Image (cartoon, rainbow, N blue to C red):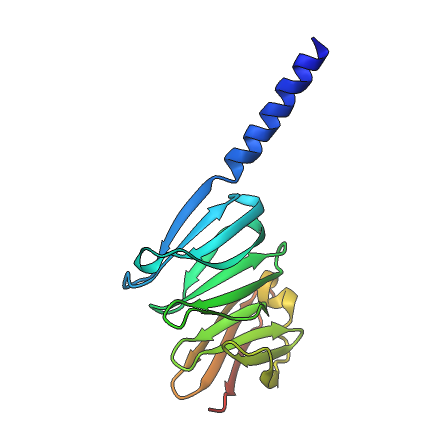
Length: 187
């Protein structure tokens, strides 16, 4: 009897794990020209992102997801695959379905310029800029008052690229202070 119960418990756990890994989500670009498909655990488990554009199935990225999948289309061909590491820490990969390229991991990206393919990331009171698909930073700018806690917990941030290579960050904070910072980003 005891062996029978142990087998039932084991089978129940196996079927629960199998169900968790059978989650599928289709992620289509705004103009419907690109499609990613995620297969795997809905959260706290392994999964695979595939490029399924045109009916073909190409592995884009696979690995463990704590929360997910989180995908943001940055343009009609570039998708951000956001990987949570626990609040507020996360990193992102960017996949270009037209070029069929995946970027290296960028920690704490806060803005993306789709036209120039530039990523702004946040480090403690610094904004670091990368060109998409490069691991080498090309600009590091001081950002007094723009710390991780302020940006993710005690302020309402608005970060974006504007006009001709200008990065703008505006923050309204709980303590009543405001931060308004503009950084010129070289070509």
